[in-house]
Image (cartoon, rainbow, N blue to C red; front, side, top):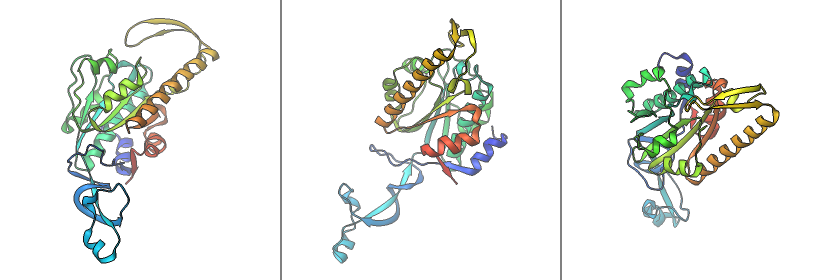
Length: 284
């Protein structure tokens, strides 16, 4: 992935949209641009009800009779895990989708590395998933996407190691049966920060009429004879929108960040039009 020129351009152009300190707090090594509890002083501002009184500068209050608080730079945990959905649906429907999935994993891992942090990539499998360490990320282009179990089943069986208090980034199409509330709750439960990226192929995001087709589930092998006409596509789009709206609502509930991307748009457009507006990336 390091030789991918498109990915390299994005690594040069962007940096992570560093999250603020979550309510539970954590001890990290990387300093962010927000204000939090690190020992590096940033600036003063006037006290606002709810501010930590331990940060009140009482000497300034004695001099000016104005309550001022000291602001410190936020600490960002270097423990970042990127959970990449390794199911067959991530590659079978579109070669561009598999490439974009690898690029996104490489992008987030590379941006963490630029900050001096440690990222691991966990590719979901039918058996216990083995995280790729930072030194192994050049193997991302060899990911085969061959899992048949949906992400929900892998999580329920404990096949995916989730580290507590990690910054967790999840990349999946989410095109499998699931309860959005239960899934987001499980992913957010022990994470310090949760970002969720839905990656779809162009046809999955905006299908067109194809007439009568036999559809084959690439993971279960089940078949379905279906007429892909205007009415069928309208029902599909309504269900897709409902699923996306539910996932987005659950992300808001758990203070997670949500973005929907389309593989054929290319990494540049994905970064510019989806990840940056969502706050996951910002210009260097």
